[in-house]
Length: 158
Image (cartoon, rainbow, N blue to C red):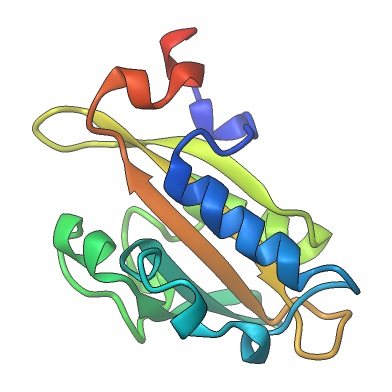
């Protein structure tokens, strides 16, 4: 079962709030990185990540990773290309998620298996950013780690 293939509406309150913030910036088209004001969303910052998109060849590099994400990761991947991260390099689910958002400009939220001692899932959201209003050059994301099944009703139906 490949849960990542199914886009969902954000289930967690954190991801819903990040999406609402992005929506507020996207009223006149795609927002840019410069439009994000950290002081507007301090409680969300630990769950946020920024990924720089480059083309020819397509690649993604982490530019910022929130503390709540780093605490659950093997290490802090800030400054690292996902091509250099074994579980994220192509053709991984994460690579596919980033590629889809970068090429379509459509926000995506999905559940991805997170293999740890409890075999949990993460609700991972990815939202496009564009400094010129057309080319996706950055991805704004947010991640919430599942702590209880009741947090993600979508998963309970699986």
